[in-house]
Amino acid sequence: MTVSERIVDDLVNNRVEFITTVPCKQLAGVIEHVESNPAIHHVPCNKEDEGMGLCAGAFMGGKRPAIIMQNTAIGVTINTLVTLTQYYRMPLPMIISYRGELHEPVACQVEMAVHTKALLNQLLIPTYHFHHERDVEELDAILKHAFMCNKPVAILTDATFWGGYCS
Amino acid sequence: MIRSEILKNLVPVLKGEFVVCNIGLPSQEMHLLGDQPSNFYMLGTMGLSSSIGLGLALTQKRRIVSIDGDGSVLTNLGTLPTIANNPADNFILLIIDNGSYGSTGDQPTYAGKKTSLAEVARACGCEHVVECRAEEAVETVKTALAADHGGVIVCKCESGNIMVPVITLDPVVIRDRFMTALAAANAA
Image 1 (cartoon, one colour):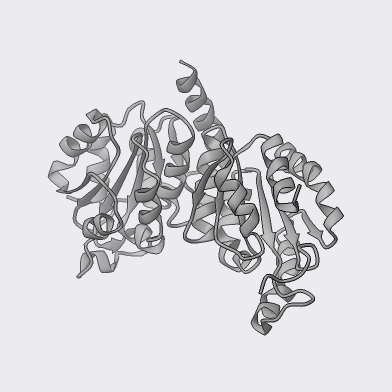
Image 2 (image 1 turned 45 degrees about the horizontal axis):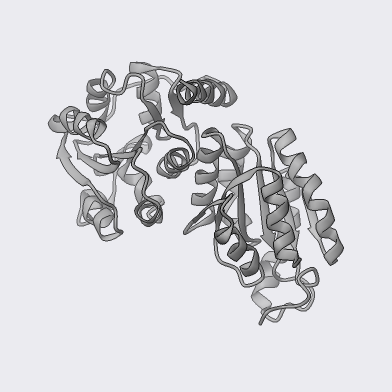
């Protein structure tokens, strides 16, 4: 089983049935399995704050949501996380590609990487950093945690976790 | 006719419906004129009324009406392709288009100038897009509610506001009573 398959299996086993995504090279395998899994309703979105709105609706509609996005999205979604997800106390696992970490070839990605954890910390969002492949073993507990406490949680997956950059 | 008059006329039509109410004055007016547990009031997060409504429509059986504004749709234009490509027969997007940012002092929007939101919605692939005048709002919404498909209504009206109190309900209370009503309706 690949790491991508393992992540989608954990989502399904935790009854996550509604997932919105924006494209990402590192998360492409996860997104592919999300799309093909019959237990998941996959709705690609155009921007991450839009996706969080979809997830808020899905949660109120009775389905557990999740969003898959890049860490640059933290800059886009602060207002939505604060005034919708957190203010109305909604759970939202965010599976995030952590660009700009070791082995990153694109310098600009580092600019947002250096702010990512500081912003998540400022927002009091529980944050988990997957650096080694074995870190995926915590995903099941993290998902249970998010739906237990009705909070957004961030799972940052860096290049080392994915075994290097795709390009 | 201004937005508050349209909403006042729509209150009896929307009684018992599950309604996502846009941030600012639209939510405050719906709360003042026709509060019901099945109204979800947005207290923040401009632009996401349609996204929340679509997420709701795609995950359960009951019909969802999102009341939006032209300024809010413009700030989240990406919502229209998402609505078009994930069609939900139980989702009606009602855009009250007064050509202005009402909640911030009636500054003009581009929808009141050269941009037609109805044409944008059609170009995005949305089906059953109807543009109507304020005076036709009640009949147009009634027709949409009677149909077995969703759609997008762009209701053109004049700019202007009435004085309405802010909503002091706790957001978790708003969400809980909405979810309780929706779950009961789906179980019925």
